Image 1 (cartoon, rainbow, N blue to C red):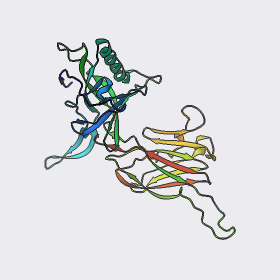
Image 2: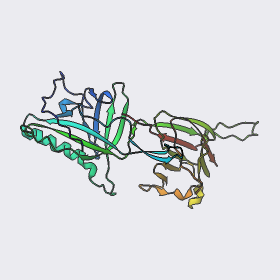
Image 3: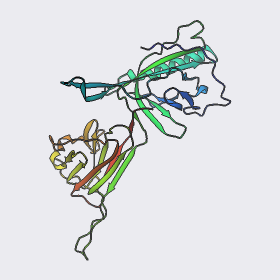
Image 4: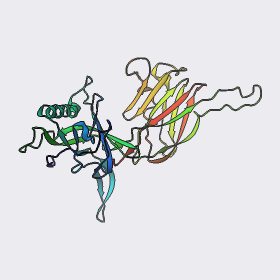
Length: 334
């Protein structure tokens, strides 16, 4: 674990109280001026750059916010050298120094204990046995935000120097991120809905307005591939989504699950990562409809950076049939 020492500091005078959120922007190595917050698994938000909160980030020493580390799989070449076959992104480690203080020892130790609990909660299994992550979020002066899921790994130990631990101390946190990419918390969505259907010959030749069937360009503004979630609202007898750029496709046939066609107002959600298909039947998690996919041909494809040409097709659609695609752009850096 990197050893970073931090001096005992007097909280800087910013001339006024903090803003109650991330605080006043501070210069952080690798990303420039920014504010930061940490949200623990209970949903409580902890400002990290607001000196009036009783703790603040020691900007010198923050690291691990830039591009992910990759592990290569290569093939040796007969004439020397090697060819890159695959690049696997590795979990990210972030170093985040915090300075905690109080007017009295009791006030300081209460803040120290509360912060330690907030970070170590990421190591406690929830009711489902899963250890929920915390969320580190970086906000820019222009209002843009990027966040990453973190688990506490170590570092909340204090400096162990003379004079520390009485009314102030510094901790150098090591945060482990199973997914190394930063995510924009503002989702991007694409909505398509069938218009009112008309009889082609009554009272005269008519073409109904429909956005469900046909081609759509979906733009991923991020740096890496994203895995969208689809929500389909019936009626529909078969749902087919095709990435025309790669030829990958998957189809969902509701009747293959034993349910029958998707009726008007009924919804089914298709998640591409992790692969999951849930019919909203009123139960907490929904009925498992993964067997309704056209295995083994089904490919739950993702969206590459840039423009992606895709096709939505709903057989048996009606006036209230809709398709909603939602994804969160992912980035290499904060």
